[in-house]
Length: 243
Image (cartoon, rainbow, N blue to C red; front, side, top):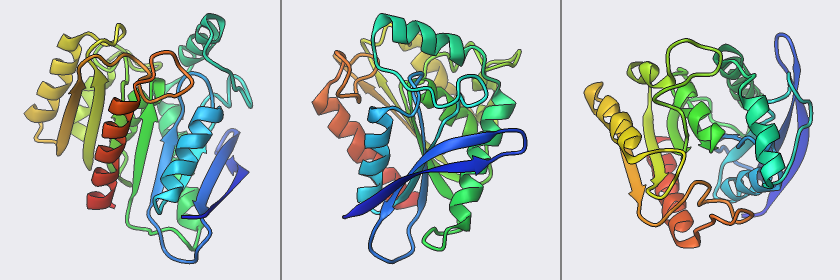
């Protein structure tokens, strides 16, 4: 499906947020999807994911969630990039992240091409963590959380970890983990799945052998094209069934 892309500015309560938008060219009504960045900003990889999901028949938006800390931040995947990205991640706050994602949703709802009955969200790395958190928003009907680290033991700017919000998840959620991911031990994956089961959340947890952190990103040495393709297909099935 042919698409068009553009950068826009979202006017939040206390900050203007840059966002990358991709949508089909063909007239119609499409579901909306929010794409949440890694620690590396709305870089080429995240813009590519946003464009790819638009090509599948969605209006997709990737807001810059570091806007308060580092406006227009974008970087690659070197050790120094990881260090800077983590520093910015540790300065974020859950309340502001929720507000930023809600602002992106509200923008999608202003577009005549977008269905107003709920949106999807997909996030990678830190974005995988953030989408687990934002799955608690009323408008989020389907979440694809890719290798979100720290869910069981941390929440941005909060004293209780993000996993304690599991009971508030409103829609369906898929979680994708590589079993060779050094930042997410298998016992944490089990803990997440147990919590989702405990609260009867509509969920699927995918454990991929021989896959590392960042397996979906073709710009990282950990890229695993086979696993990335499998997780992508599961994400499309999730969105098709829920949006």
